[in-house]
Length: 164
Image (cartoon, rainbow, N blue to C red; front, side, top):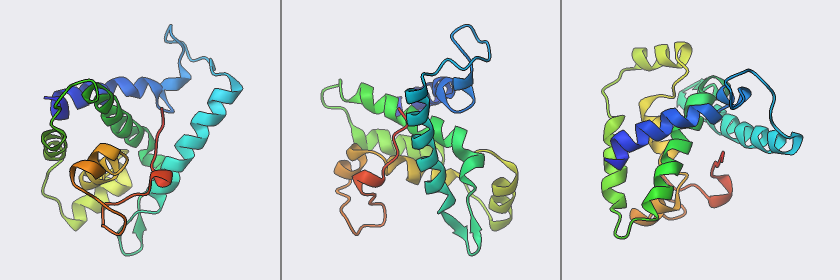
């Protein structure tokens, strides 16, 4: 349940705090309500996410455009982050079940042609990136699957993306 419905709810709610939703105040009016310090911190974290995605090569000579996918990628990561926060309060939480359920929600067949279309015409990351990039950000994933430095899914803690 956490890996499907819980994640989707957290993902959608977090859009209120991505680079688009965060431009609106508590009354829904477009208003720059940020303190300069908070805005600078957010923009630096967002740039780290953009840079990370910009460096993902999907096909030879074809990279993800981090700016295009940044709002959805922010919601993906912060949605899972919200669920991880809940999971930490649940004794005996089954992280393996969560990560498998989350991955299943993005499982799909694809093709070169479809992926090229999505990369050029959609603000969502490709499905496999919505799984792999997101789970790499969390200690719980690394611990659940005993992912170590040198493994393909390993991402050093200092390279991980945290928006909030």
